[in-house]
Amino acid sequence: MPRTGLPPASDPPTQRTNMQTQTSPVLGKPRITESTGPKLGLITAIATLGGLLFGYDTGVISGALPFMTLPGSAGGLELTAAQEGVVTASLVFGAAFGALFGGRLSDRQGRKRNIMLLAVIFFIGAIGCAIAPNTAIIIVARFILGLAVGGASATVPVFLAELAPASRRGQIVTVNELMIVTGQLIAYSSNAYLGSISDDGRIWRGMLMLASVPAVLLWLGMLFVPESARWLVSKGRIEEARKSLLRTRPADIIDDELQEVQASAAKDAGSRTGSIRDLKTPWIRKLVFLGIAIAFLSQTTGVNSIMYFAPSVLISTGLDTQASLVATICNGVVSVLATLLGIYLLHRGVGRRPIIITGQGGLTAALALIGIFFLLPESSLRSYLVLAGMLLFLLFMQACIGPIFWLLLAEIFPLRIRGFATGLAISFVWIANTIVSLVFPILIDSIQGSTFFLFAVINIGTLIFYIRSIPETKGRSLEKVEEELQRRFTS
Image (cartoon, rainbow, N blue to C red):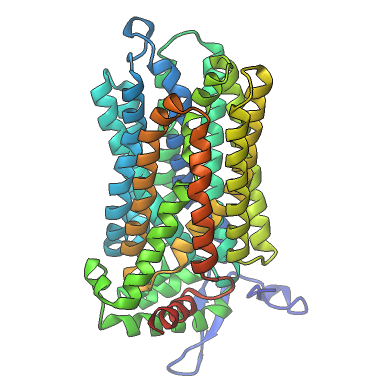
């Protein structure tokens, strides 16, 4: 159990204050340092509003699209099937750029300032989508929104990983995944509710407008959040780093961690570039390629074919629009519960490798089942069996793959290029996501359920890759992870 930093129970009550006594490393004399006490939970809740926005903005389009395809006289934009794919993909295309440049910005200006900037872009993008007068404008607005989604996906997990103690890093970083799927659940639920209370085809504008609220809350909340101590140390701002740690740790345990971070930063100082030039170093290049592979393959699971197009898939099996919107809520509920299961597994000390390998095997089997269910004659039974297959897929995806791949990308890169390398890897999340978003509507229209057999085959290869390549990072500080992976990729 971690020490609390408070006096023992036998101490006089007058000693129980918010002041901590420490020994000066220079004079050897006691000094009093103010501590606000650990507030890691509150900080995590604020920072992961970025994940909530990520989830809402990627999930809301599934319910908005059926209304956006209506004619202009009915409040829609008269989207064709091809335009549906472009509108959906414009966000994830923007996210690829947002992740790449967001990671670099977080290295330069800090994790906190970058998240605050992203909150502003989230707000602008949400308002732009809600008031877009035509298809061209909504594509641009969705692209802008994608910049924020991608930047948040690259910055928030790194920020949480750097703030969290090694013993709690898995659980803390995974809260971001929980907030992503919670945002998607909110999107599905609000879509179903708004679709049920209004016959106005313009209701899709209200669905998209709701994303502006958490954007404002994120910006305001980040005013009270400390900067990452590890980023501050990398910039030579040691006293500020100490104050940051005092916001998230008991005062009597921070010195050892600060010294370890300083030692790692000093080792990197002579070779710091934080850019693509670092790929000239063989072990870093191999590590970045591993991260890119983890990121890209997480999306070729086909998860976003379900998260973005679930209502359209269910409509193709015979369900009506409203029933499909309501049924999609089940996807959100299962995603949230599965992510809680993933957090529990990490809390129980299960390693990253067994979780992600088990999840990959399970979701591959679920994809094959969905393909089989599509072969059945059209009926309500087939519709609900396809939905059940989706839920089984999401159980393995959100309990095992989703939490672990985000966590690994926040853990495996060296401090000096962490923002850049994480952003580069996560940009491939969105590149793969864009490909799936563009291709899936075409595949499901042409080969229908066989699309899921195709995904299953791809994921057999991913399972083999995971078994051979995924490192174990459980219980190690970020500095220890860096040392071990450097040895692994230089041997």
